[in-house]
Structures are given as structure tokens and as C-alpha cells.
Length: 376
Ligand SMILES: Cc1cc2nc3c(=O)[nH]c(=O)nc-3n(C[C@H](O)[C@H](O)[C@H](O)COP(=O)(O)OP(=O)(O)OC[C@H]3O[C@@H](n4cnc5c(N)ncnc54)[C@H](O)[C@@H]3O)c2cc1C
Image (cartoon, rainbow, N blue to C red; front, side):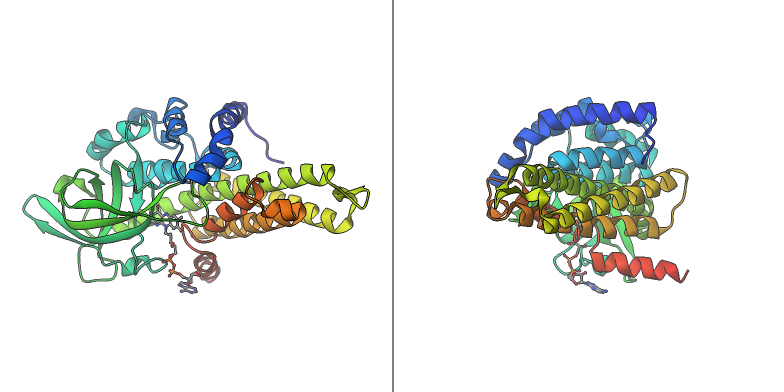
């Protein structure tokens, strides 16, 4: 069992109340309409959640990986897609800037992003470069006091409406010659080329982006040229630990819904919960969830103590992503035909969970990282 501090318990209660009131009632609607819960996003700013890991001097609430994961877990249980957009904003963008940007850049961008005035996104993936992120082809060439970006990015969470984006682009011939830029949506040459249709996480709009001689002022280069690999690494463990919180939340939603259902539904004159094959599914789901929680929160604690092994985040992400997808499938099976129907939420849980095995690095890539670390 996790021993929460009194401050963590207060955060937990506040976020649970918020999720119940602001996220849960809209989860089905935003999935159906493929829109996002902008109202809830603005209210997260009032709770300080948009700058959860950022020091107070830049407007954040200066909490650690444990608290950020706890928030993802609670919000993810209520509405995974809103939580994915929240993750792309608060961790992939805000925390990324906090770790890698200069003090001047932080002063310029963090207050707007943390107050909810601006939405953030992180653009790394390209149509031809996903797992092989360093194979990206988007180029940035320095001309006078500007960088000129050309290329395209795809699958970008929040890309449809982001005001500021952390964008990675090639600045040299070497494989690792990649640099990081802050691009504002109004910069000339930047365009949202397509809103993408997805299987799940539909309440978290995803976009394809185009950079056509996009003009970026040189002061928007983060760090020095060709430093992106270090930037990616600096934030990656936190990304993978916190995104695992979303998987924990989805699995909890699956377990709770199917446990309740199995207690109420009767077949052959007997509640489903009395059938041993149903019991087996529920028991497995509960045990896997407990194991996932123990792994994720102990890894978050290790991260907060300063441990930076890439294995930490990769193990959390791999284990919980598989666990959440399986929980979604099991929940559907326990509900039978009702589970397959759109009017019950478990098919959405499964569609949302499947993304966790792909986004922020696929299961296969996590296995590669873990096995590589075993030989270090
Ligand atoms: C909904 C959604 C939101 C996303 N949000 C963002 C975002 O905000 N920003 C962003 O930059 N990206 C985002 N992504 C992109 C995501 O990180 C990539 O989809 C992911 O890294 C995989 O890349 P890919 O889709 O190109 O698959 P590919 O790399 O083409 O992989 C296809 C398959 O091949 C396997 N494979 C690839 N290489 C190997 C290997 N060496 N060994 C074994 N198997 C391998 C993969 O595991 C996978 O099963 C998002 C994706 C989705 C679907």
C-alpha cells in the first residue's frame, strides 16, 4: 500500500472532486464528438495543475513525479483523453521547457502556459520517423536572425489548437544534429494541415502540422544547436512515469465498472460474480493493477530521489500499457454484448488504453530500452 503524506492526500481529494465534477460527465460526449474539454483545461489552471512540476518562481506548484503521476492516475480514470491532452501540455511542453529552456524563455512562455491562456504541444514525430525519432527530416536553417523550418510533423497531441509548440528539427548532417525550437501558432509558414481521425483518445484532438519556410526567431532556439538528444533524455523518464498514471487510471475504471456489473448481472439465476471464470478475470485485473501501482509509484519516488535510469520509465510504461489494454478487453468480456455497445463505457476504456502501447514510445521500443539497460 502506498503511504500518502497529508499534502498528497489533500491533492488526491481535490483532484478526485474535480475529476468527478468536470471530467467524468463529459467523457462520453467528447469521445463521440471528437472535441476536447477546454473548460476543464482552464479550470485545471485554477488548481495549479498546468504547472505541476514547475518551481513557484515561474508560476508552478513545484511538485514531484509522484504527485504528477497521481494526478494523471485520478484524471485518467475519469477521462483518459482529456488527461492525455493535459499530459502533452503539462509534461511534454511545460515541464520540458522548465528543464531545458533558458530563464528568459521560461519567463516569456511559462506564465501563459501555466495560467491556461495558452495551450502547449510537443512535436517530434514525423510521417517517416516515429520510433526512429532521430531519423526526422524537418530541417531548420539559420538565416540572419531567424531559423527557417521546413517539413511536417504528425500525431501531435493538442496540435490542432496549440498556441506554443516545442518542435524538434534537423540542424546538421549528423544523425544527432537535431535542435529544439519554440514555435508559436502565428509564426509565418506554420499551419495545422490536418485533424486526424482516431480509434480512441478521441477527446484529445491530434494533428498533422506543416512547416513551409516557417520563420522562427533565433531567440526561440532552446539551448544550443544540435542539443536535442539531451533535451529529449532530460524529460523522457518523467514523461514515461507520468503517462503510466493514465494507464493505471484506465485499468481502475475497467476494474470498478466490471466488478459492479458482475455483482448486478444475473445469468442462469446466478450473479456473474459467482462464476469462477469471471472471478478469475476480476482477480487478475485487480492483481495486475496493484502490481502496476507499486511499480509506478515506487519508480516515481526513485525519480524524485534523483534516480535517472531510463529503465525506470520504460518498465512503468510497458507494464501498465499492456495491463490497461488487457483490463479493457477483460471488462468488455465481462459485460458481454453490453460491453461491445457504445452506450457502455468499457469499449471506450479499451480504445483509449490501446494508445498507451503506442504513444511516447511503443511497447517494442520500451523492451529495447529495458534490455539495453540490463547490459549497462
Ligand atoms: C494518439 C497519438 C498521440 C501522439 N502524440 C504525440 C505527440 O504529442 N508528439 C509526438 O511527437 N508524437 C506523438 N505521437 C507519436 C508516437 O510517439 C509514435 O506513434 C510512436 O513513437 C511510434 O511511432 P510510429 O507510429 O511511427 O510507429 P513506427 O515507428 O513506424 O512503428 C511501427 C511498428 O514497428 C515497431 N518497431 C519500430 N521500430 C522497431 C524496432 N527497432 N524493433 C522492433 N519493433 C520496432 C513498433 O514498435 C510498431 O509496432 C502520438 C501518437 C498517437 C497515436
